[in-house]
Amino acid sequence: ATNRTFTMLKPDAVEKGHIGAILEKISASGFKIVAMKLTQLTKADAEEFYAIHSERPFYGDLVEYMTRGPIVAAILEKDNAVEDFRTLIGATNPEDAAEGTIRKLFATSISENAVHGSDSDDNAAIEGAFHFAGRDTF
Ligand code: CMP
Image 1 (cartoon, helix red, strand yellow):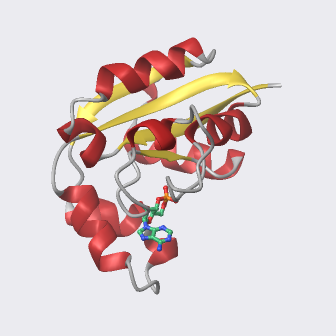
Image 2 (spheres, protein in one colour; image 1 turned 120 degrees about the vertical axis):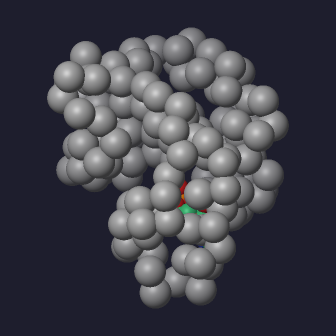
């Protein structure tokens, strides 16, 4: 069925000038952009967004990384969006990511891995609503 996922092009990808190349790959892979903006997370935003990782040793570094510069937040629509987008971005660690995936092409490391993709339909809805008002979603 057609459904939606949520993505962020993370600060490392934006810093390196990869916004255009990554959006091109997303569009070429059949995803329709239904919301999008350039924004910067506050510390409180990042702590809330990644609250599930709050007990992990990398949490502090993750919050610092995700707040250090602008990100592109977007909601994407496609058949089987959540699963297909996770296939397109590749494994969390770019060293393990398949050839041609966004993380293989553009990620820096396991911690600075260029792009976020929601891991379930429920989280896609929660994460999309965290970043976008209804009137900014098409
Ligand atoms: P993501 O899987 O999108 O969400 C959690 C993020 O934490 C992950 O991307 C990385 O950006 C970051 N991270 C940093 N270190 C690790 C690690 N050792 N394992 C998993 N994620 C990590």
